[in-house]
Amino acid sequence: MKDQESPIKVFQNWYSSQPKEVQDTVGLFILTKVPRFIMKEFDVLMRPKETLFSYLDAIGGNTAEILGETLLLRAIVDFSVMRRFAGAEDWEMKKESNIAIAGDIESEQGPNPMSNELRDMVLKFPERQKLWANTAKSWKALRNSSLSDEFLEACEQNSHLASGE
Image (cartoon, rainbow, N blue to C red; front, side, top):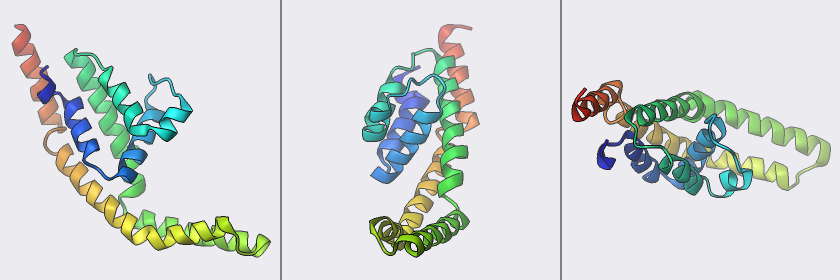
């Protein structure tokens, strides 16, 4: 499979075009959920993009392996990332939760750096919600085109034709 046609490369290009918060989150979710990845916690937390790319670059040139890894990546992003960050109701729930936790902390300890941080996070939620809504749109567009079942099937068929099967 040619590198420019590789679904792994398509995924890497999409991932690289995302804002840092999205890159860090997507990288962390993938690296902690891929069963074959041997996690080095420091690398996952401090260098998620570089660590993820190291993992992706190690995927062999075998079409079946590339397609299998692509399906795994797609599933992790769909079910572990987008479901948690893309929905407006998720952000409302996170907002209410952060406010409640900050209130609990303040009732026990008074205002402090932790409760202040939670309240500051709540103020950033509208901006972050918009960022994730845009990410969800770009992910959906990619899923419906270059990472669709039809595209992956075409990659498999082209591989069979190229190998003379």
